[in-house]
Length: 322
Ligand SMILES: NC(=O)c1ccc[n+]([C@@H]2O[C@H](COP(=O)([O-])OP(=O)(O)OC[C@H]3O[C@@H](n4cnc5c(N)ncnc54)[C@H](O)[C@@H]3O)[C@@H](O)[C@H]2O)c1
Image (tube, helix red, strand yellow):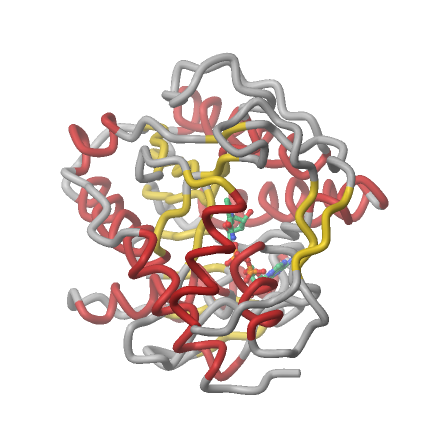
C-alpha cells in the first residue's frame, strides 16, 4: 500500500492498522507536517506529491496495489490567509499524484476528505446526500478533488473510496504515535496542553450558539476507528467494490464545553477557560450519519469520547514535543 501523507497523524495510525492486518505500508511524505518518527511499519520515501518524477520512481519500485492519500495542508485559518498554497498543494498535488497512479495502471484509491465539504449544516446528523457548499478554501480544495475522482471513475476507470471524516481525535493505545500538528489548532490537544500547564488556558470561541450549553457541537471519532475504515476501504476496493463516498463519525455530538470538562476530569487537572467571540466559519453543529459506512464497509466506531480523551492524554502527557 502506498500511504501518501503517511508520516502525519491519521496516515501513521492507518499504517499501524494496515500492518496489523497483514499489509505492507510504504509511506510517501515530504515531512512538511509529518514526523519521520511516526514511520514505523514500513519504509519512508521522502517526496512531494507535486513531483511527478519522484512519484513515478517510488510507484515503479514498490508496485502498490492501492493508494491511500492523506497528504494535504489542513489548517482552515491558513487556507483563508493563503488560498493559493492550498490549491497548489491539495489540488495540483493530487492531480499530479492521480496522473502517476493512472499511468501505473493502479485503479484503487482511498481519499481523505472532510465534513468541511458540506459547509453549513442544513440538518443534523448529516448524511452523504447533504448538499456540498464548502465555506473556506480548505474545504473547497477537498470538494474539487472529490469531483475529479468522480470524473476519473466515469472516464478513466479509477475506483475510489472518498472518506469524509468528522473530527479525528485520540491516539494509538500503545502511546507510540499521536496527534502532533504544527501549528496545533485542534481542541483536544489544545485543552490537554492547557491541563499540562503548557498553555495558559483554553480559549472557547462563542457561547451563544443554539445548542444545549451555547457552545458548538462536534462529532469526535477515534483515529484508530478512522484507520480501521481505511483498511476496510482497501479490502473493499481490492475485492472489486465500486466507487463510493462515506461519512465517518460516531453520530454523537459533544459540545466544546462538555469536551473541556471531560478533559479536566480525565486529567484531574482543571485549567482556566477564556471566552472569546465566535470564529468566522464555525458551524453550530457537525454530526455524522455514518449508516452508509456500516452498510458498505461494515464499519462502526469502537471507541467513545472517554477512550479518545484517555488515549490523547496518555500520548500528550508522556512526551514533550515543544
Ligand atoms: N485531522 C482531522 O480532524 C481531519 C478531518 C477531516 C479530514 N482530514 C484530512 O485527513 C488528512 C490527514 O490529516 P492529518 O490530521 O493526519 O494531517 P497531517 O498534517 O498530520 O498529515 C498530512 C501529511 O501530509 C504530508 N504532506 C502535506 N503536503 C504534502 C505534499 N505536497 N507532498 C507530500 N506530503 C505532504 C505532511 O507532511 C503530513 O505528514 C488530510 O488530507 C486532511 O485534510 C483531517
